[in-house]
Length: 218
Ligand code: DX5
Ligand code: ZN
Image 1 (tube, rainbow, N blue to C red):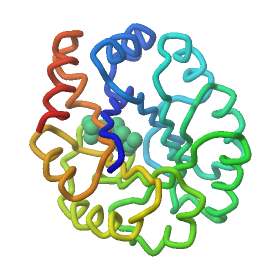
Image 2: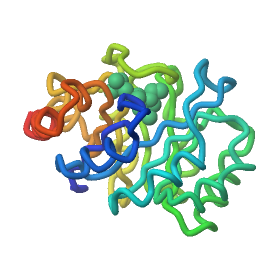
Image 3: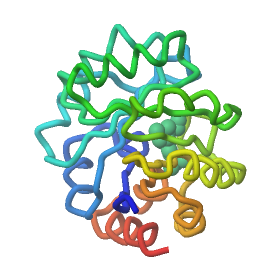
Image 4: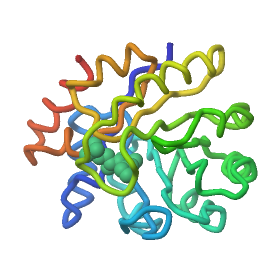
């Protein structure tokens, strides 16, 4: 089995003190740091881009797990690599050339991820599995933090686990993840858990620690 990973989504942090927030979740024991990039076009919200990620980079040595909700994505891949992202995940739906985008990420020397929305079937990624290091299963429609978990993600993860059996691919789940569902998600086959609101609630280092442990131990 792949290592268990908790990846706090910085989207739910206090943007007025990003460096401090990054250091806090690092100290609180997170594994990766999840960076949600939104363009107001592929998703109906705008977050931050490579320059903001570059500014966060000196504050931690943990893995920067970038989730690009942008279309097109190809023109920006190099900028995210240079900003210090270790994983670069693109959406299968961002199109039109998913295979080319994944090749480009690998050519930049980064781990390549592919994400699928709740309404997208696993068939969309079937023929690119040899090019991916992680699959990010959306359990909300992307664009906003704090939404309710969509339960059909559980069956999708079960099917994805069978589909990726024997391959070194992380199965990451994103959206509405709390300690109430992380146990079931792990049983279904997810090993990496993105959580925004569930990690940052409380606003203090002590609460971040307890929140991360809660999701991990469930
Ligand atoms: C949604 C983002 C998620 C989001 C998760 O588009 O991809 O990473 O920040 O936030 P929560 O955990 O609050 O659903
Ligand atoms: Zn995300």
